[in-house]
Amino acid sequence: MQKISKLSFLLLFSCLLSVSGISQGIEFFDGNYKDAFKIAEEQGKLVFVDAYAKWCGPCKRMAATTFKEASVGDFFNTQFINLKIDMEEGQGLEFRKKYPVSAYPTLLFINGKGDIVHKATGAQDKDGIIKLANLAMRKDDRSEDYAKLYDEGNRDYDLVLNYVKSLNKVGKPSLAISNDYIRSKPAISKSQMAAFLFEAATDADSRVFDLMLDHRDELKNIKTEEEVVAQIEKACCKTVEKAIDYESIDLLKRAKEKMKKNAKSEYKAFDVKSDMDYYEGVGSVDKYLDKADDYTNKIIKNDADKLVAQGNHLVKNYKSNMKAVLLAEESFERSFKVKDSVDSRIDYATALHKLKKTDKALVQAKQAKVLAEENGESAVKIDRLIMFLESQ
Image (tube, rainbow, N blue to C red; front, side, top):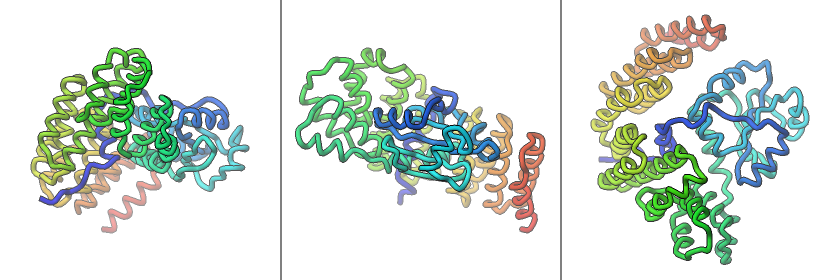
């Protein structure tokens, strides 16, 4: 059967979202943007800047919703130095001389040298901002600088570690470099080796991953248990990706076995999610939908955001499949019992319109307007949606 899709870098990240949240949202740097650039340069990271204005409605909405998402915080706090800059006062008056903006919010990803790597305008939801972040990271490829020094024979610990990090950051293979370095038996401490293996263990189906687990006691001194579990799951997700590429059920089983043995607390969700991803990736739609049903009703049944995301995904990709449509509607309806919101009602209305269920879509759009008015939010966008649906 022809494959529907390959598991991409973004799908790999979505697999990681089943790990319990470490943070409660984005932690913004409380200091000057020039200091943030210096820190970013030292740590090999990008600076994420939310360029906003106090009067901007979408800016306020992002601050109250997207930036407070645990999964967004987990990602951004690890990968970026984060800044909020009011462009109309304080340091924003100086910042905008070099980085002028014409709309709010403007989201900037800037390297430590002060160069813009990626830029976008407009409010983003959880999925949208993570996609932007992944795109920015892929565009910030510093691996060639390290590759030149490495090829010249430089095996300094920090250089090799940063080389591996830079390859992983942009989704390039790093296992060959990691294995070569380990085989060279470098004169480093156990703690340094544990830190290196933590970064290098990108695939659970590898010797490097097993070595990382052998150094788990040393990792306790430099990483939290949540970070170690997240890295284990990330590596297991990579093996699931490989299982899809090779259509290998054996690789899928190995990924699940290693997850169960080494990250038992997260295994239940991983077990179902990895099956779901695998069957979708190899084009087994019926098996995928069976697993999607399990995922919806057993794993994410109390997570409104994931239920809405599941409903959107099913409608976008399987709107001609009756089983998928029913599951999508069930996902949306269940999400409202957990947490009703304007955005989720709009999503449902939009999905129902795609399914040519205009009357039901109109009901959801009107409910979104009621919620918006109760929350004191603008209903202009919803009114336009209602007018459009009534014209159909």
